[in-house]
Image 1 (tube, rainbow, N blue to C red):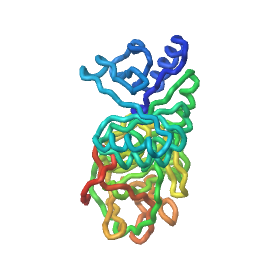
Image 2: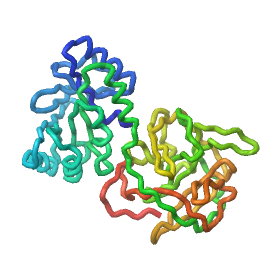
Image 3: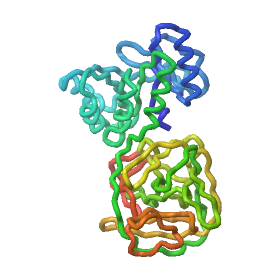
Image 4: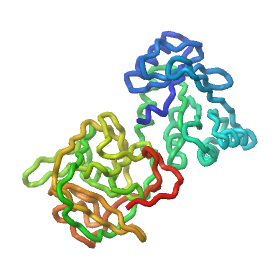
Length: 346
């Protein structure tokens, strides 16, 4: 979840206000905190606390592991001050950055320089910075320290992290074949939001290309519309989370934030409310993406619709020759995170 990438830095001068910030943050799912005090505020299980110092962030021993880690803080106001951070990241050292002026382009430089996941932090008091920090070069910073001085700022912070930060490149690809694929476990994703007919989620057998499956905001002659639902496909398929990572459909759980989008270019983040996995007849859809074939397994049903240049077509009516909408992604993935590696998915 995106909250896992956020550290709430307590910035109120009054202890009672900081306590209120922690209480509200916990209700919103945040579990990482920083304080200038040497001891955390009544830490709860699975929380991580950091002691904030002028030099960086010291993990408080006893809140996670005995060997507490330290993240050194750098202040970057010009290109010369960026060089020590680039060198530290190249060595795999944990580094945090507080920007003095420009921030997006130099952050992209640091994302590219990073050699080890979990080492690049950025510090800000402006919630408006969050989407850019999360999405720089599709990956963003590993951790964002947000200095919070009032509980109300958490409302704005939550709004910002719910905004899409993943750029999408839409392609139309020709469907080459549609064939029966026997019975399999298919996953229905019910969200806590009402979806429009053209909205849906991205799924595919390979991360290199994800197909767009539309919502059930339009019913059939025998079923009512279910505007919160996407009948997404077989259990093994990848889907795209709000933070740009992929996850198997079968691994989604209530509370996960996924990317809902439409081929028109709109996108937003919504939360998973429920997952339903049932045995159903499937069809195998094969499409040509450049010089390779990509596949998706979908339930054979009138309410399961693939987005095409001819509109949303039910899998029961889908035929070779139509152009299906989808999004290409980086093929290399480790636990859902894009990585640079040699990989072939079939």
